[in-house]
Image (cartoon, rainbow, N blue to C red; front, side, top):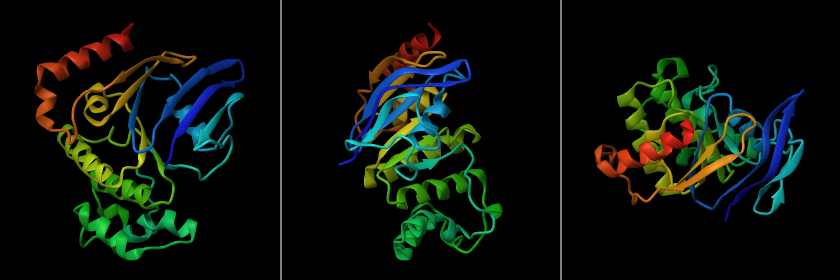
Amino acid sequence: MSKLEIKNISKSFGDQLVLQDLSFSINDGEFVSILGPSGSGKSTLFRLIGGISSPDSGAIYIDGEKINGKRGAISYTPQASSLFPWRTILDNVLLGQEIAGKIDKEQAVKMIERAGLKGYENEYPHKLSGGMQQRVSFIRSILSPQSIICLDEPFSALDELTRLEMQKWLLSIWSEHKRSILFVTHNIEEAIYLSDRIIVLSSKPAMVKKEFTIPFKRPRNEDSLLTEEFLQWKKLIYQELKD
């Protein structure tokens, strides 16, 4: 079981209050997206969860253990794929396991093949397209020992069709491995299509403004993106972001 709890955290930089009394949780195996205005503190939140910095007040827990300022408790995939250019695709994928001291090369090769990257194991990142690099980055997160994955707008640089293919691929891998995922995006459609719940943040200082439970059954079908119900959800969430 892996539950992430954010309890009443606040964070300032100088006299700029970025997060204020922010609280929410993610249950084991749940896919939760965060939407909010630009500059509302989403990246700051990820830095706190990842232990890169500590909140001024409040606490972050995984399975009841306080992780304020603790690095390595979660797996993190940033907007850029952040692959090491001097490591092969296979070596990049194995990085998290290497750090943890438990390497399963056979499993890594299977995951690379599952991602449609068979034959690229010994290539270097510059040989791959942006979408392919993001697949490698996500495989690295899945194979890392941490049970909670934070994804920071991983598809924002991709064109619309590639983005949809990546979303479908992400859901297929997630449904198989059922890690807890916290996903940051600016794209309302993407959030609805992927998520169990959506958390809408206010403008700075960020607080939880609204929470939505998405009713669409899994596995998700891309045809749902064109339904009237999907459009109504998009309008509802857009209005919440706008107000």
